[in-house]
Length: 104
Image (spheres, rainbow, N blue to C red):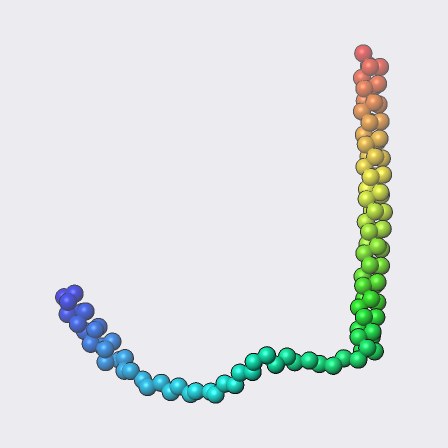
């Protein structure tokens, strides 16, 4: 039964697949050897671009400085808060110990 199934599927696939002719178009190519493309740019245009880049760099640097200052302030605030919490916890522990000593 397996051999007949193989024959049936083989004949169906063979009849289903018909070779199709493919069309190939050739495109003529032109190659240029050693032909550099040079765009002429005036000194004024170069200066304008340089000034634009400098302004953008300055604004980015200023933002970085502001962000650094804000982060430093936040770190200082966090440090002070942690120190305050630590002091309060120490006072609580000291009070508990003195209360226990007074009860004895």
